[in-house]
Amino acid sequence: MLKQELADVHAKIETLEAEREEIYRDSRVDEAEHPRLAEITQELEVLWDLRRRIEAAMSAGLDALPVPPPANPHEMIG
Image (cartoon, rainbow, N blue to C red; front, side, top):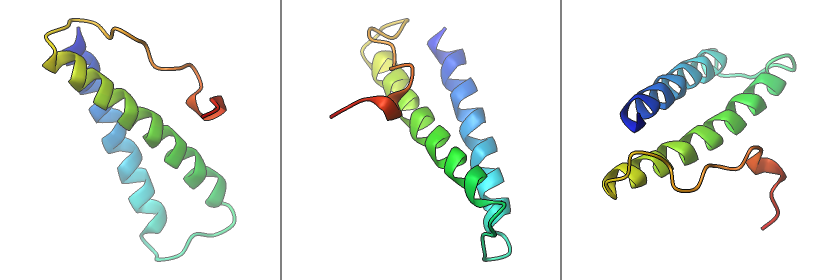
C-alpha cells in the first residue's frame, strides 16, 4: 500500500516540477502565472512532507502511516 502511495506522490511531484519549469522557461513570471506558481509551491510542500512521512513509515517496517498528514497544513499554527 505505501509503495503505491509513494509512487503516486512521486509522480505528482514530477508533474508539478515540470509545470514549474515550464513557467520559468522564459526566465520571467508574468502576472497571470503568479497565482499558479504559488499553488504549485504549496502543493509541492505538502507532497514532499507526505513523501518523507511515507518513506519514514516504510523504513520503520509499517504498512500504513501511523499519523496521517494534516488536512490543510498551511492553516496549522506553530
